Length: 335
Image (tube, rainbow, N blue to C red; front, side, top):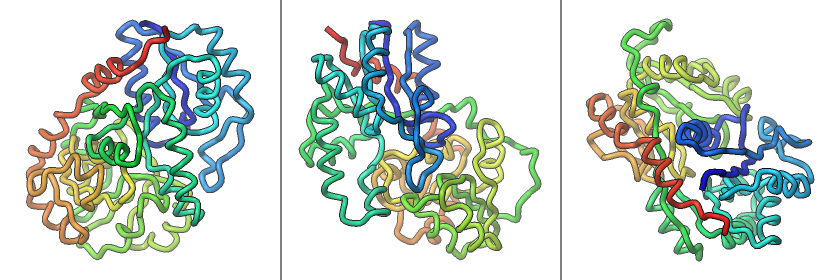
């Protein structure tokens, strides 16, 4: 099995966990000799998603996807997202009897429910229908596997995610202006599902650093900019340098399935203050590399006493190489 077709509605310039997973996998798979083709929104006519203009939905992609599958002759098809491209590829595979795998990355139903009340049950049913015909549905944690299985999902398998520990390594003297200590960082999208306002309203000493952007940034920066330092999206070494100014990551989201930013912060030696919810609960060891609590101020202040070396050691347990091995193992060959 050497030719793998990825189908994804999440692609650059989007900044999210799905894109980061793809950016990690694709070069690793290529280096192992796999021939990879990706079907993504930039190959189609698109329209912006309401509330998230950076996310663009492909329009009427089914016929073209069928042609792309015919031209590539893949040995395995993996559908990363439940958007228009994902549904179109699923439809083609179902019609032709082609096996495929899917990935349940996000609690998309919770994101919708925050914007459009009353749609939670229909969206849940739609997601369950989407994944029901997959040979395997991949998730990133055991707790998410248990949750989906209790909701009626079948053929759920775990592929743990990773972190680039060579990149995410604390910079001893970042080439940035110093900030008043201690520095508490928020590192995520600025959107309701990430719950940034809980961070922005915390009364903690020192500096609150906001790394990220999103549909709510303008409103939030106008409202909270005097007491929080907003620096926007950062990438690569520049991101690591900003994280290296911080002492603690405060992660207020309650809707995660994993939380890649948690392990990226840990790799930079930052303990994590978060709620006791899926994602942080699967990663953080209480009193060792973070604290889980409904009181994020208390948890964040307690994190100041924790060892950066212990945080780094936790992150080193998460390898993209191991994650890639597990992903390949769970692909289903086209017979």
